[in-house]
Image (cartoon, rainbow, N blue to C red):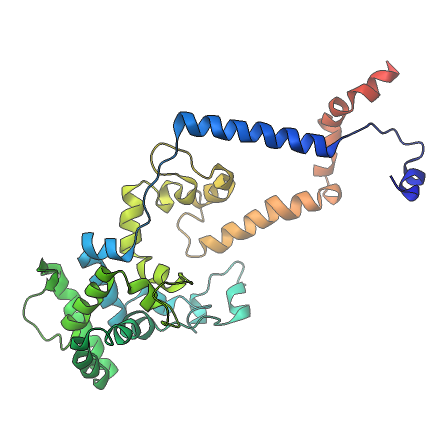
Length: 313
C-alpha cells in the first residue's frame, strides 16, 4: 500500500483481502464445474448453415430471395443507414434516429451488389452467364423489374428438375438463366465469397453481405425448425432443450413484451432500455433518490463486514 493510501485510510477499519487467491480459486472451481457439466450433458452441435446447404435443400428459397432483390422488393431497399439512403426507414426513439447520425457507411444496392455482381464474378468461370447478364443490363429498370416480378410470381408453380428451377412459360427475359446461375453458384460453395464486397478471395472474410442475403425466409425457416426464432427467445435459446446464452436473457426478454414485441423500432427501444437500466442507473446509483437508500434498507454490507460489526456486541 502506498504512503498516500495509508494516510487516507488511517483510522478507517480495514480487513485483509487476497484478490489473487480469490481469482485463482474461482477460476479453478469454474473450470472443474464446466468440465463436469460438459461430461454429463455435452452440448448440441448443429452444423453451420452454408449457402451450399441452402442451394441443395431449399433451392426455391434461395432463388426467391434473389428474385425479390432483382424485382426491387427486398427489405433492404428501405432499411436505411448504414446500408441505404432511405433515412425514413431508420429506427427511432422519441423521434431520434441514431443510425442517421453516421449516415451510409456500407452502401448496398441489393439487386446490383447481392445478385448481379456475384453473377458477374461467376461468369469468369461460367461463360453461359455472360449473354443473360448483358441482356439484363441492356434493359431499362422498368423492364428489369417487370421480368423479375413475373418470374417471382411464377415461382409459386415452379419445380426443381436436374438441379435447375423450372417455371411455366412467361415473359421473364434472361431472369431464369440468372437465377439458375445463382443456384449453381450457391451449390458450388462460392456464393459467400462472391457476395463479398471485394470478391477477390474464395472465402468471405466479412460475412455481412452473405448474412443480409440469407436473413429472410431462409434463416427464418432454419431458426424455426430449431425453435430459435425471435418469438421463442432467439439467441438466448440453444438448439435442443438447453438454455443457451442465459446471460443474454435480460436483453432478449424485452423483445417478448409490448411495445417492443410488435414495434418496428424494437431493436433501438431494447438497446435504450438496457443502456439505462443496466448501465446508467447502476453507474449513478449513489445520486438517484430512493434507490440510493436501498443499501440501508437491505444492509447486506453488515453481513459482509460482520466480523467488524460483531466487535461492538
